Length: 170
Image 1 (cartoon, one colour):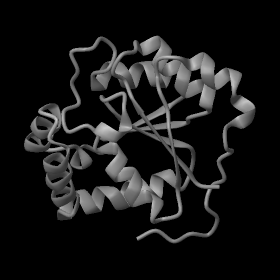
Image 2: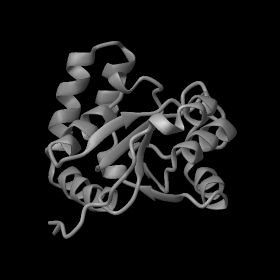
Image 3: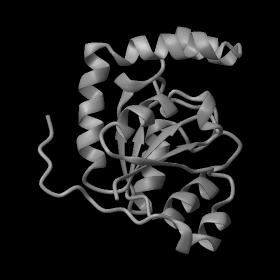
Protein backbone atom coordinates (compact mmCIF):
# COMPACT_ATOMS: atom_id res chain seq x y z
CA UNK A 1 0.00 0.00 0.00
CA UNK A 2 1.30 3.46 -0.93
CA UNK A 3 1.10 5.69 2.13
CA UNK A 4 1.84 9.37 2.38
CA UNK A 5 2.19 10.75 5.88
CA UNK A 6 1.76 14.36 6.96
CA UNK A 7 2.85 16.13 10.14
CA UNK A 8 3.00 19.60 11.64
CA UNK A 9 5.34 20.74 14.38
CA UNK A 10 3.03 23.20 16.12
CA UNK A 11 2.84 22.38 19.84
CA UNK A 12 5.77 19.99 19.97
CA UNK A 13 9.52 20.03 20.41
CA UNK A 14 12.19 18.56 18.15
CA UNK A 15 12.76 15.50 20.36
CA UNK A 16 9.10 14.39 20.42
CA UNK A 17 8.75 15.27 16.75
CA UNK A 18 11.67 13.05 15.71
CA UNK A 19 10.52 10.30 18.08
CA UNK A 20 7.13 10.33 16.32
CA UNK A 21 8.73 9.98 12.89
CA UNK A 22 10.89 7.10 14.11
CA UNK A 23 7.97 5.34 15.83
CA UNK A 24 6.06 5.29 12.54
CA UNK A 25 9.07 4.29 10.43
CA UNK A 26 9.40 7.47 8.39
CA UNK A 27 12.56 7.37 6.28
CA UNK A 28 12.15 10.67 4.45
CA UNK A 29 10.73 14.05 5.44
CA UNK A 30 9.52 16.33 2.66
CA UNK A 31 9.44 19.94 3.87
CA UNK A 32 6.69 21.77 1.97
CA UNK A 33 7.00 25.12 3.76
CA UNK A 34 7.41 28.31 1.73
CA UNK A 35 9.63 29.71 4.50
CA UNK A 36 12.19 27.20 5.74
CA UNK A 37 13.05 29.21 8.86
CA UNK A 38 11.21 28.84 12.13
CA UNK A 39 11.16 30.71 15.42
CA UNK A 40 10.67 27.32 17.05
CA UNK A 41 13.99 25.84 18.12
CA UNK A 42 15.07 22.89 16.00
CA UNK A 43 12.73 23.44 13.06
CA UNK A 44 14.71 25.75 10.78
CA UNK A 45 16.10 24.04 7.70
CA UNK A 46 19.73 23.45 8.81
CA UNK A 47 18.91 22.47 12.38
CA UNK A 48 16.06 20.19 11.31
CA UNK A 49 18.18 18.54 8.63
CA UNK A 50 20.93 17.87 11.19
CA UNK A 51 18.50 16.35 13.73
CA UNK A 52 16.94 14.13 11.08
CA UNK A 53 20.25 13.03 9.58
CA UNK A 54 21.48 12.00 13.04
CA UNK A 55 18.42 9.72 13.27
CA UNK A 56 18.78 8.27 9.77
CA UNK A 57 15.89 10.24 8.24
CA UNK A 58 16.45 11.93 4.90
CA UNK A 59 15.40 15.59 4.65
CA UNK A 60 14.24 17.10 1.37
CA UNK A 61 12.76 20.50 0.62
CA UNK A 62 9.95 21.22 -1.80
CA UNK A 63 9.76 24.97 -1.28
CA UNK A 64 7.79 25.58 -4.52
CA UNK A 65 4.92 23.68 -2.86
CA UNK A 66 4.85 26.15 0.04
CA UNK A 67 1.80 28.29 0.68
CA UNK A 68 2.32 31.83 -0.69
CA UNK A 69 2.08 34.70 1.80
CA UNK A 70 -1.49 35.73 0.85
CA UNK A 71 -2.60 32.14 1.49
CA UNK A 72 -0.83 32.03 4.86
CA UNK A 73 -2.40 35.37 5.80
CA UNK A 74 -5.88 34.13 4.86
CA UNK A 75 -5.39 30.92 6.86
CA UNK A 76 -4.23 32.88 9.93
CA UNK A 77 -7.31 35.10 9.60
CA UNK A 78 -9.55 32.01 9.57
CA UNK A 79 -10.59 32.57 5.96
CA UNK A 80 -10.36 28.92 4.94
CA UNK A 81 -12.18 29.32 1.62
CA UNK A 82 -9.88 32.18 0.59
CA UNK A 83 -6.80 30.22 1.74
CA UNK A 84 -7.87 27.15 -0.25
CA UNK A 85 -8.58 29.21 -3.39
CA UNK A 86 -5.20 30.94 -3.19
CA UNK A 87 -3.30 27.71 -2.58
CA UNK A 88 -5.17 25.77 -5.26
CA UNK A 89 -4.29 28.48 -7.79
CA UNK A 90 -0.67 28.35 -6.64
CA UNK A 91 -0.59 24.55 -6.85
CA UNK A 92 -1.63 24.76 -10.49
CA UNK A 93 1.40 26.92 -11.34
CA UNK A 94 4.18 25.44 -13.44
CA UNK A 95 6.75 25.52 -10.62
CA UNK A 96 4.44 23.88 -8.10
CA UNK A 97 3.35 21.20 -10.60
CA UNK A 98 6.97 20.36 -11.36
CA UNK A 99 7.73 20.08 -7.65
CA UNK A 100 4.59 17.98 -7.10
CA UNK A 101 5.75 15.49 -9.75
CA UNK A 102 9.14 15.29 -8.06
CA UNK A 103 7.49 14.76 -4.66
CA UNK A 104 5.28 12.01 -6.09
CA UNK A 105 8.30 10.17 -7.49
CA UNK A 106 10.12 10.47 -4.17
CA UNK A 107 7.13 9.28 -2.13
CA UNK A 108 6.74 6.22 -4.36
CA UNK A 109 10.21 5.02 -3.31
CA UNK A 110 9.97 4.94 0.49
CA UNK A 111 7.87 6.14 3.43
CA UNK A 112 7.67 9.91 3.12
CA UNK A 113 6.08 12.48 5.40
CA UNK A 114 5.03 16.00 4.39
CA UNK A 115 6.04 18.67 6.90
CA UNK A 116 4.53 22.04 7.65
CA UNK A 117 3.82 24.03 10.82
CA UNK A 118 0.12 23.59 11.61
CA UNK A 119 -0.76 20.75 13.95
CA UNK A 120 -4.21 20.27 12.41
CA UNK A 121 -3.83 19.15 8.78
CA UNK A 122 -7.29 20.51 7.91
CA UNK A 123 -5.93 24.03 8.40
CA UNK A 124 -2.76 23.44 6.40
CA UNK A 125 -1.89 23.40 2.72
CA UNK A 126 -0.23 20.00 3.18
CA UNK A 127 -3.74 18.51 3.20
CA UNK A 128 -4.33 19.94 -0.28
CA UNK A 129 -1.04 18.43 -1.47
CA UNK A 130 -2.01 15.12 0.13
CA UNK A 131 -5.37 15.20 -1.69
CA UNK A 132 -3.50 15.58 -4.98
CA UNK A 133 -1.39 12.55 -4.15
CA UNK A 134 -4.47 10.52 -3.25
CA UNK A 135 -5.39 10.74 -6.93
CA UNK A 136 -2.06 9.01 -7.65
CA UNK A 137 -3.03 6.06 -5.45
CA UNK A 138 -1.65 7.13 -2.07
CA UNK A 139 -3.44 6.61 1.21
CA UNK A 140 -2.89 9.56 3.55
CA UNK A 141 -2.15 9.23 7.26
CA UNK A 142 -1.90 12.42 9.31
CA UNK A 143 0.51 12.26 12.24
CA UNK A 144 0.65 14.42 15.35
CA UNK A 145 4.19 15.08 16.56
CA UNK A 146 3.41 15.81 20.20
CA UNK A 147 2.79 12.28 21.50
CA UNK A 148 5.07 9.66 19.90
CA UNK A 149 4.02 7.07 22.48
CA UNK A 150 0.59 6.80 20.80
CA UNK A 151 2.31 5.45 17.67
CA UNK A 152 4.55 3.11 19.65
CA UNK A 153 1.50 1.81 21.53
CA UNK A 154 -0.47 1.33 18.31
CA UNK A 155 2.32 0.18 15.99
CA UNK A 156 0.40 -3.00 15.13
CA UNK A 157 -2.49 -0.87 13.81
CA UNK A 158 -0.41 1.29 11.48
CA UNK A 159 -0.59 0.42 7.79
CA UNK A 160 2.56 -0.95 6.24
CA UNK A 161 4.22 0.83 3.36
CA UNK A 162 4.74 -0.93 0.03
CA UNK A 163 6.83 0.85 -2.60
CA UNK A 164 5.25 1.05 -6.01
CA UNK A 165 6.76 -1.49 -8.36
CA UNK A 166 7.50 -0.72 -12.00
CA UNK A 167 5.88 2.70 -12.03
CA UNK A 168 7.20 5.17 -14.55
CA UNK A 169 7.25 8.72 -13.26
CA UNK A 170 6.78 11.75 -15.42
